[in-house]
Length: 100
Image 1: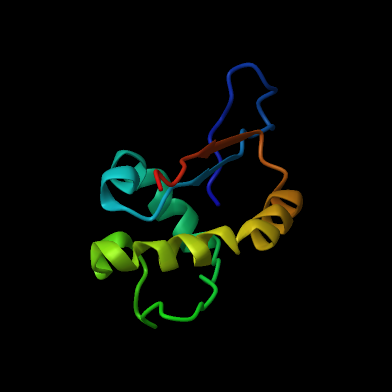
Image 2 (image 1 turned 90 degrees about the vertical axis):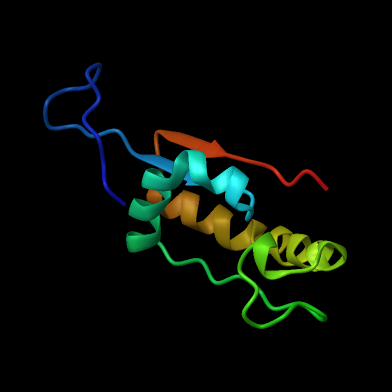
C-alpha cells in the first residue's frame, strides 16, 4: 500500500490509510484511486459461498436477488480483514457498509 506524507508527522514518517468499500460501483467509485493503490499491494480473496457465482466480484455481476450471497461472502472477510489491519497497522481506515 502506498503511503502519503502527513504534515503533522516528522518528515520520515508516513500516514498509512486503508479503504474497504462495499462491493458496488456506486460505493467503490468515490474511492477509486485509493482502491487501485490498495488492490496493487493487498490481495483479499473473497470467500466462496454456496449459490454465489465463481466470477462474482461485485453487485454488477449478480441479479438483485443474489446479492445476499455476495454479502455473505463479504461478511466472511471479517477475520482476514482483521489480520490485514493488524499486519498493516494503518493510521486511518476508511470503510463503507453494505446497505442490505
